[in-house]
Image 1: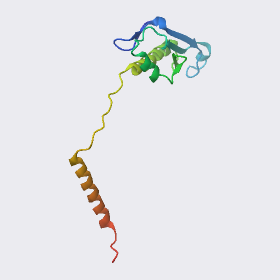
Image 2 (image 1 turned 90 degrees about the vertical axis):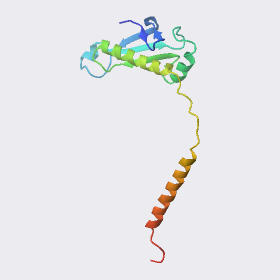
Image 3 (image 1 turned 135 degrees about the horizontal axis):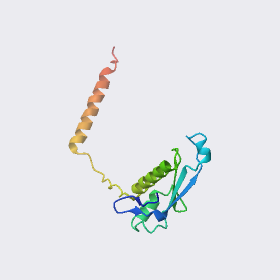
Image 4 (image 1 turned 180 degrees about the vertical axis):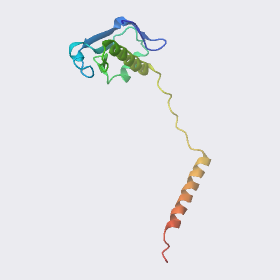
Length: 142
């Protein structure tokens, strides 16, 4: 299953840059998991990859900084019984993470002032609410 990993329309990670490691996993499968290597670790060297465009690299490194170990992004999948399903899951997670990290930043929010009408409505509502509360009070001469 060594095939390229399409992240976005313009960004594809070649299979040669992905490193898979298999080991025994815990979880569902009974004695089966004690004898087969179903756990998958998918690694990708984000720092030194020639397939990452230079304008995206700083953004991706910044956004994935908590998940990187020496510039290498590692995804682990061990929830399925078969190695093939775990490989598919790991690749899907890697794609989602890289796609999210490569996405454009959201537009900067410009602060705006409330309109005069909004201010007046807010003050009128506060006065109405205060009047309602004042009418609930017992008068001092009662």
